[in-house]
Image (cartoon, rainbow, N blue to C red):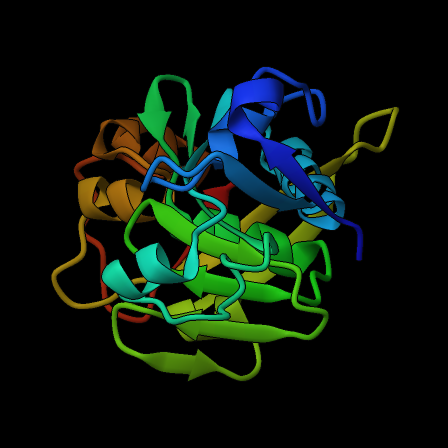
Length: 218
């Protein structure tokens, strides 16, 4: 791992990659020193490309020990080493679902730390081993984000001349679900309920039944 020490005063506008600059990873306590692992930047860029977001926002990057303890972390955690970032993404003017980001990292075969923080935010780190967790429930994820969220991953090939691959996930309807609710949680916005219904060849007025499977476009 290549952890580099930067100075906010001297390096804040230095480009780390196509989408990130040093200043985005500064500790919120205003410290000049900023530690950033180059492998973290590479991982963020891979996720950026995978989900096709418009922006990826660093809510928390490097932290001093004191600040990490203040915000609920601990001295010596991955943020204090320059190995971690808490992020949220925007696409089409809307915040992307954290579930989409977590599952995208699973698709990439990501072998590092991934944490579900909220509906739209996740933690990502390059600690060198797979540790997946849900901060909202203090749960450790063992197998799969798809399994944890109750969705099944599907991939099908279209019959077009170019045989392009079309990716989607399968969502199993639960009691109380509606097109609006499912679109909001799985597609990032309830306003996409018409798109969801059309994608499944259903009318928006169709009654959904628990156990029913719906395709969620990715």
